[in-house]
Image 1 (cartoon, rainbow, N blue to C red):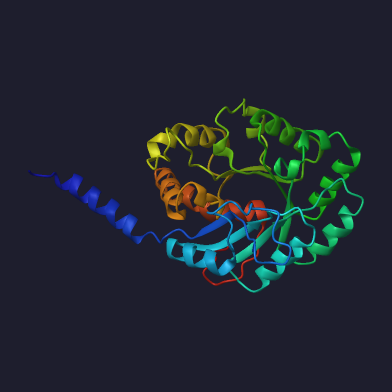
Image 2: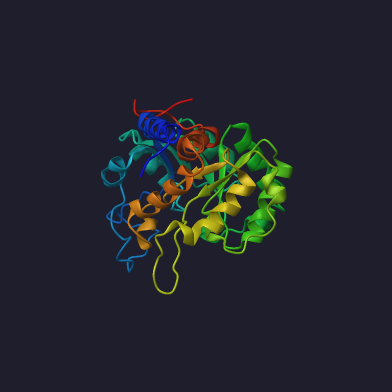
Length: 306
């Protein structure tokens, strides 16, 4: 078979371009840390969860993640206990793979500002998570002036609100209301692909301070977890069409992700999806957008910076 010279040169040049591109470093914006061996145990996971109920600490995460190209991670608090914020920050101080933590504080509480100031003295403390976790109803809290005042204090500190909800329509409505009341607050919505019945996203999509994690992509179908991209493509396309390349973040949800598949399975799937969008989109998804959203702390020479 004879190949035209122009075609051959074009293919060769394309291959050379891809070969010359450096691997995209990855910042994982969603991992959890806990140690069931601690005195008093942990609020989560439950003791009867054979997959999760074991230490999830930075050294274990590093062994899994580094060979896959992960150069940094942001811890998302999975405990409602106030002092566990300090426990995580102490862990982070000892391992540079952690570039930030998102803590657990309640904006409507009388001591919120004092505790926010206390933990924010540590530059690794990058914000708080508030939503459906720990039986907290974001929609209800938004009707309380003291809660809004707390979110304004969070915004003034340059920190982030991470949120998640069991009901997609209620969560989208709550985030729209939050950004109406506190327009300078950066908001990150966790695990967006898990919302299978997404409401209209036009209003949310028009707000540049709202970021979305393409995390928890995998799901169960007929008793198994499909590992082929085509099964998830429609969901990913809808999110991409609304938020574009500038507001999507990579997150693994480790070790909770072990309930679905090994770490590398979902990473391979989303890497394949974003490769199709081009090198720039890959960079934004895997690390550049996380800088804009979290303003995390570079602690290692392998970690990228803008």
